[in-house]
Length: 257
Image 1 (cartoon, rainbow, N blue to C red):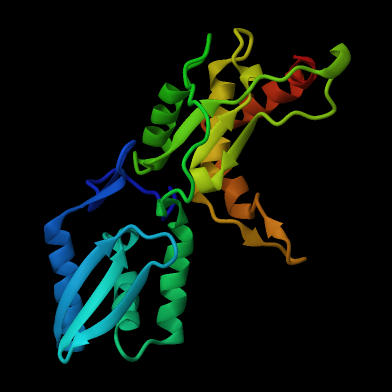
Image 2 (image 1 turned 90 degrees about the vertical axis):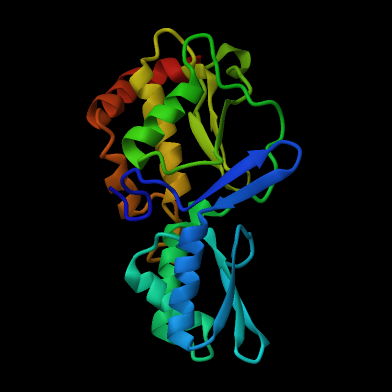
């Protein structure tokens, strides 16, 4: 189980997206107060702590007045392990350190999926197909593989395209992850009776991994979308071998559909 998305637990903060007002953050006050007291104890001052849901930064602080530190902290840090909280508290004070910055940076990278969408979803969301329900598949995968910890995600069938002149395609993209919109798109070629549900689930699971596992740089400096961690997590899919074998056996039919 990923360190970023682990076993199910009551979240310390929940983002609810309202179509009219946009994202709204609800925070457990007891958790906020506990973190505020931790900062006060470390820096010997009063603290005014605000838990935020920002896009551009995950923490910052300023001396509001002598002896009063005002701090803003992204909700991804609520429930973080002691080592991460200690580093965060250090960074909020007057003597930040490179080691603390590294620890906070690693936690931020591992939890990037909690940063809200930069752009609204464009177009109509369609989860129910003729044969497969993407919404139900997403809920099941979130519960089984991510402890129910993923939220504020959208999934939809993309627009249907056909091979030109009745010829077989050279390639086909079965799914895609639109990071700025937190949106998974699934090729409707998979919404067919002959396509097993476990294979559709595998494609959705693959795109969910793009959501939770950060892009890293390879040895050549280029972005590595399928890192060793990604490939290891992908193999955790309970019928991974069966899904891969099915794709290999049916790739020609997918390319022709």
